Amino acid sequence: MASKNAYLQELLRRYQANFDIFENYRLGEQIYPAYAWFCSLSEKYVLKKEAQLWAIKAFEHVLFVKEDSINEQTLDQFMHTIKEEAEPVLVRKHEKYPEKDHMCTYITFIILASEDPDKQTQKAISKFHFDKGYLFNFRGHSETRIAVISMASGNIWTNRSGKDLVPLLNDVFSKTNAIEKHFNMSTTDNLYESVS
Image 1: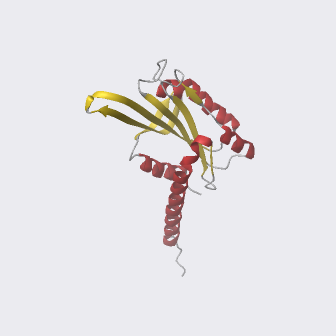
Image 2: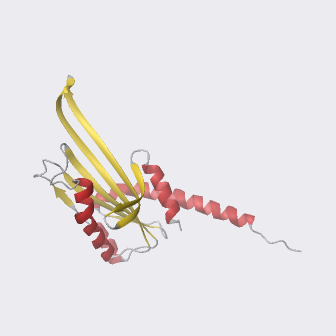
């Protein structure tokens, strides 16, 4: 069984290559163990920078969550957070629409759970969906990805948008589990009783 703290630290280490990371991040009334933010800008010019043809921006906001267990009520709370806090604050920054040239924002929840969710919750995770367009999608859209990983089994459940997170989450679990097993074996080898 991997520890949530060790798993999260390894996951953040992977994210820090491309994301700005903030630990103990407050959004509304909730404090998250970590939050990661990313922005990508693509532009097209004609001959020189003053003659810009187009520009698009893509964003991702990742909220990392630690839970003992996850159920349908927990998922309802995440949906409330998305609609009332994450989308208005992180995507639109309290404005009516996202900024100019906005194309897409992913709001991602990665939940580290101590145990496997029940079958009903697993189905609810796979059906979890939020997609909002702005100005008939002329100002882009925002979409939610969710991934739940059990520290007990290493099993991962995602919604449709979150499926591309599975290889990363699996790899982090394998590495974290291997390191912790090695550490525990080393510690056990050093603990012995002398026999007289």
